[in-house]
Length: 394
Image 1: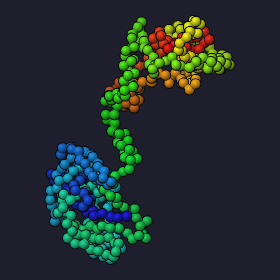
Image 2 (image 1 turned 90 degrees about the vertical axis):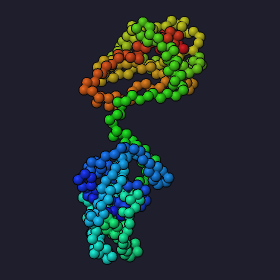
Image 3 (image 1 turned 45 degrees about the vertical axis):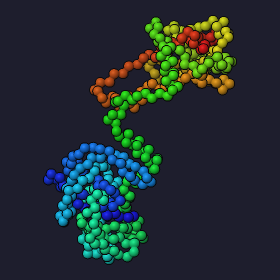
Image 4 (image 1 turned 120 degrees about the vertical axis):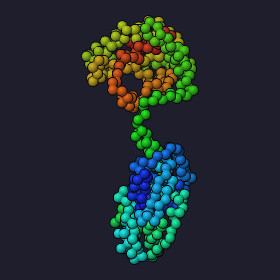
């Protein structure tokens, strides 16, 4: 535990006076004051970016406001105007030490009248070497080796060093830290995350530009080239990765999956009827259509999509839904492996929720069976094979 050179001073501006604790830091080239103190004094200036060199050759960049403020010692022997830059928590959690209490425990400190610190628990002013005249030491009082050194500076008495004996160190909680210590990568990332968390005034309210890589740009271009509006619905081609004729024969796997699904539906007649109604509804609406046996047996690339029911009892509309399993693999290959996924085009949910704050009324809508409303081109359409499995024909 090491105490730094701290003294109480008076900061003043336009008749306002505040007693604050100051740190005489001969390792800093500039003087800084906490932004809340500057605001309380009514100090004004123009915001600008400042770079501060910290440990390990690192550089911290932050916004600051140059201000001019009056500084006065408690005994009024010093009364000067200084220039400083505003910042947040200039010395972190640096605390002061009541040296009047400590003086009675150390012979060489007895009789020295240390000034009383401000009631503000923080150190609000860091005086750098740009105010070199305030760093001048007029007298030093030393004790035994390892004991703190009392120093009479122009701003008053202060003391530096270890405030307690080593055997008593555990009974005290005051300790100091080096100003502007650089955090490691993990702490820096955490600090950045927390900063973004609190900066919510513009989060989600300003549209973000969609960043696409070269493959995603190619997929978007291909979608636009194949997209047509026909008979009241959009129609688009499947975004294949290269040639699609090298798909392995997966019909046997699809038939086995279908048999498993049928056994499940037979054991639960209510679910079976609901599932049958959904597929018939798909046929009526033109989402899928039956194919002839000759088409399913024809040569060329084709892929059978396993399907199974998912029951959502919490839904008020469609409780039973058909799920098409495009991730099912045969010989290490699935339909998803052959089709470009494309970029994520939906807005982040957090952005959507934040935008609810902008206006007093929010409008919400839902597109019924949205994905089923989009048709594939005839050459890559969905059919129900004569065996009862879903066929996609590249």
